[in-house]
Length: 127
Image 1 (cartoon, one colour):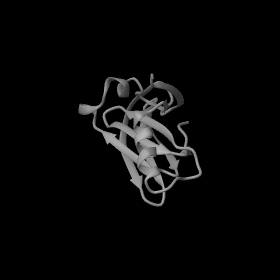
Image 2 (image 1 turned 90 degrees about the horizontal axis):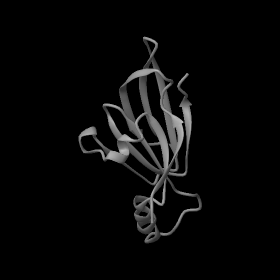
Image 3 (image 1 turned 180 degrees about the vertical axis):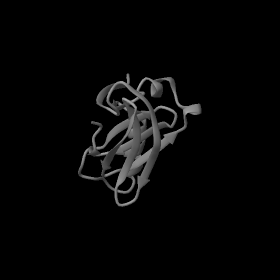
Image 4 (image 1 turned 120 degrees about the vertical axis):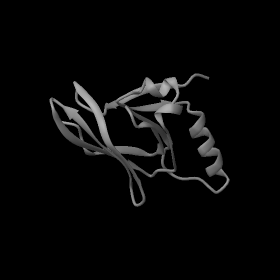
């Protein structure tokens, strides 16, 4: 079984020089916010994930090669062993009625953020 990925969104507008002030918040909502440079100006962006069942983070130093391939992008991972593990754990306690998807964002100089969630939406889309 092979794992495939689909690029859903770019995390910045090219040509962007860097990411800065990356903030992950989990509570009432799960959100990844950051700032990026565009034409000498720093701009904010933020993505919210809905119905999050699990999340994980790896710093740049321990990120995998496939994480680096997602640099600056939001991708959906298909046939994910991690999602299968999340589903198996959840099955022990019942099930949920919404789909569970595997989202990955690799943010340069910050690391890989992954979400087992139903969906995502931009709170503030890169301009």
